[in-house]
Image 1 (cartoon, rainbow, N blue to C red):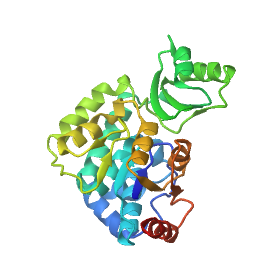
Image 2 (cartoon, rainbow, N blue to C red; image 1 turned 180 degrees about the vertical axis):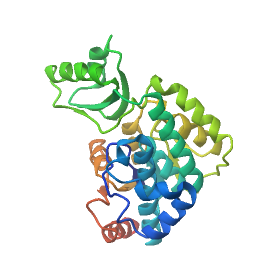
Image 3 (cartoon, rainbow, N blue to C red; image 1 turned 90 degrees about the vertical axis):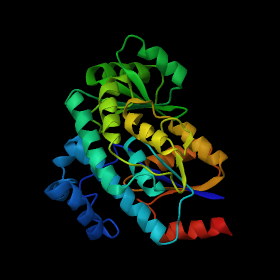
Image 4 (tube, rainbow, N blue to C red; image 1 turned 120 degrees about the vertical axis):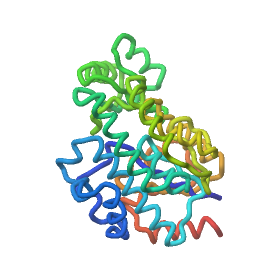
Length: 300
């Protein structure tokens, strides 16, 4: 039986999220060596209005907590991240150096925000299947962005266009339609150009073969080849998230303990919705000791 580490995407961030990380001083010292004084402002409320700071904060938090689990003897067999979460997943798998990840994520955030500085984003719609929601998208100038669960789907586009689709969805029986705390239209063709620019930056970075299974949140498939992981990381901003497929794939590979890195518990809820056959916890609400206990029980 295997352990899956999951890493959340944008929308889970909160002010102060870097202040209580395990081994926080050492982690931030390394970050500061790459990002300089920006490091000390990354998780402020003002900074988190910007995509760059949000994505960097999620990268740093995910890496810090995953490394603490590993230090305490809880090691992943599989790693997977939703959107920006793919970057800390790649770092923990050994495929991508942390310092390189910091530089690439800073660029990623800048490219995404510069492409769509305002008026765009994501909206999560719960309670409708993909086929029913797709009918509501016709002529709306919005896109399917995330297939998080069978009836939890995220759309991307201009704020006012998404608001119209959201109202149609509620009228059609959706239980919820919530604008997410994401300021860019991620995971659709609107980000093809910045994704291509980020792919160019990967040409100067050397990736390695991962030492544990890297499971793409964009395709739901396992990737071992470094060049294909680079492609997955560069282009995931413009590709539909197939998170439900990723969790089904992990389940099929005998993962029976899913541990979500802070912040938040969104992925834990989505994991349980995907007919998960084991335990699923988030470190936001559980201690490292709880994770150790579950991992030990899994190995017996």
